[in-house]
Length: 361
Image (cartoon, rainbow, N blue to C red; front, side):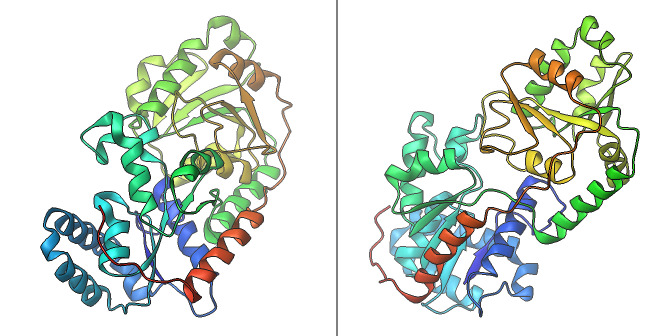
């Protein structure tokens, strides 16, 4: 069982790192003898580049597809019985792995990229066909694992098998978040309304601007000592919104982030139409921070205790003002049911399944 991650496995890194780390940790529980080879893990990302290049060349030059497959076998020191869990599926990677290399292949999709504004062109030069093309790529694999039920329901009619594995922090990251929760319990002063996110991501930046534009003087007067703090990579571009009661800190160190989380009254997440804040919401709740998010930001988090879903930026501020000062949500539980269903499917793939021939894409 070989895991091909989309990002380096860093449980404390950005959202992509965290998801790849979660997938790696889950795969290690699938079969008693399955593990992520430490030697391979160090070169997982360079190896991914080799895989993408081989699949691209095989698609552009079909006559050389078989030699590309043999090159990949040598590169990763694999035999024909390997099962590949790949987070990469551009350039027909699943079709290449399945039909050329004859591997059983499972795709772990971080997002359905054609549904995320600004990312569809990674898959196709014809935007209106992106979802169709993406589903064809996913259908080349034995199964597709999505991060949210919404993504899973969208692709299920067009793929062989579809599963949901919601994001939940890897064990190392989970323990870090629980330590933040313990420190919050010992902190009496929680007066920060926290707005975290990377402003280099357009849906996040536009959502932050909507929040700040809706914070009028009347709402500020009702804050009763609460201080709004905006932090995250690229948020320096929002400094023109600074005023009394509102500060923009930009990118912050881990130590500063911990300090902000310790004193957070709540965390606000406001997005325009996108795939949802699939890692930030659950991580904040693990820390014991109540999250108030609009419908787009809350996508993928059904019935999560500690998340309040609102319909507008103005409503977000009203809920933040009215939230009881010492309220702390319970610790969320891992997605055991989804893990069990997916684990059963992967174990069958490891032990059963016929190989296919040909190269249809």
